[in-house]
Length: 314
Ligand code: C5P
Image 1 (spheres, rainbow, N blue to C red):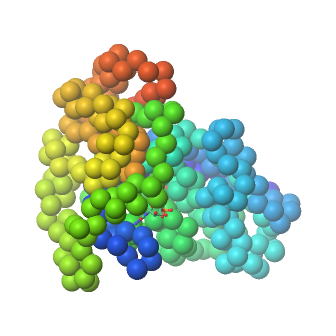
Image 2: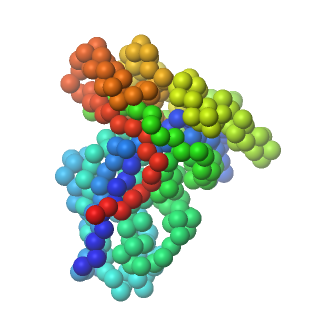
Image 3: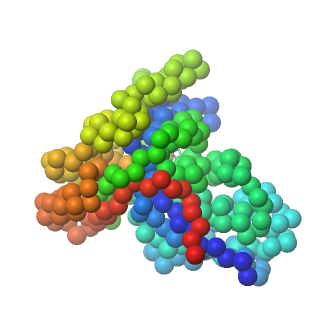
């Protein structure tokens, strides 16, 4: 029976700017996305029935059709019914290492891996852009999860411009186990509080979208200047999430006090990351912040930037 093992890296946002509303109810965004080495592993095999099954031993991961990985498999069955009939369904096993509901695109990465895996099992021969078109139907971050590395994401987050990939930067991530932020809540609250800053005309949206190309962060990335990268990271959603979750704001302040390159919430949170020059610094920062905030619900990960999206292993 055909089977594949895939690595699905998490992502952090180095930049997230909300430009305005879109006719489809989503927001027009400009983001800079970065893969990190913290990753889930997905094993996928052809089933001897027509069904899709999910196994995962993480208590917060649903095993039914609400799981994005399930929906990715279902999408492939619907788009390629003959292949589904021919090869059968798929059994998916998820080894969860990325924290759940954390702003790290863990669920999106799992869905991306399922699209890549089924493309291989069913020998569809879809190109990366073709897979990314399918991915965009499932979620805004999923096209990026397929290609990974460092990229500018615009539109809903699904339009990608690859830029020079960053590597060799270390990251400490921290997340409270008992705090989860709803992404729709974060965007809705932002709309309630900041819609007076929204741009709605096409020319205005184009102008704001293009501005990122001349931003200090992009210049810093082009020159691989880690100090400048750390100083230029930005996330508009912090403006609504940090006041609502004071513990997350305190966590960011604790990282900022450690002389890191930069610290920020990823996506809609509540994960906070700190950029570090070296593994040694990242480990020391983790130790300091752990000592300062002794809450057992606070979990840490030390990882580094990755230049990869979904990769097959084994
Ligand atoms: O696309 P995804 O499933 O990741 O989006 C989750 C939610 O985040 C959406 O339902 C929407 O409320 C919000 N969102 C948005 N604009 C975007 C991306 C996400 O408003 N560009």
